[in-house]
Image (cartoon, rainbow, N blue to C red; front, top):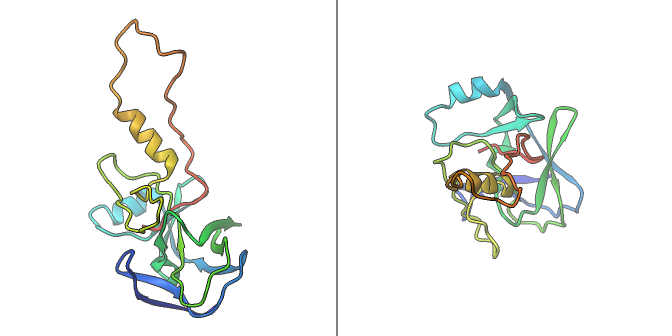
Length: 171
């Protein structure tokens, strides 16, 4: 796979392919040092940008130090992440033309409540954030005021998704 890093309209630098990539192909592996989530949080507590990618249940993260760390988020991505035996692969979900920027949906899930994670992908149906739909739903539910005592809520409860989504973010 012939990949290069260059300026991106999405965010500073991006990863681009110089050759055609067929749907289903592995594009690149997301590599770097492995840390506990707690250690990653401690090391990058004050950092504006991180390249941490959560594995499995999210208790271990990869501290990205490869070309894959430059792959930007998009709400209409051409790739997705796939975890196989503790390794993270970026895989094409459609044919990708030479010269195209490689993107995947970060599906962020563990930022603080006041972090916005604004999306700049420019997709027609951009959701405006790099957080996953499940995370946005959970955040919206947390902001709703509690129902007054004795009121009926139709038997529904707001439940928070406690498991991270399949795709996780390096940023």
